[in-house]
Image (tube, rainbow, N blue to C red):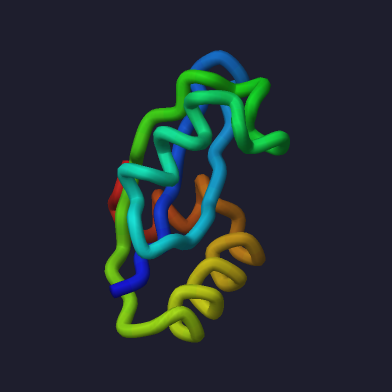
Amino acid sequence: MVYVYILYSSSLGKFYVGSTDNVERRIDRHNSGRSNFTSNGIPWELIAKIECKNRSEAMGLEIQIKKRGIKRYLQDNHLV
């Protein structure tokens, strides 16, 4: 399985969306500062985890969420 995940940084007041086959390991990577893009927003909190059938489906959903806007996507789908 591949997952699309949405994180929130209260220190930045921003959301982040990504995809992975291991959400817990990926969040640990974000929160350890090993991901350059998210290192300024530590700590990151998991807001949503969406299961996808394969990498292609996950990438499509990730792009769709980014186009819609992460916060708007969460509101539209009653996830926040």
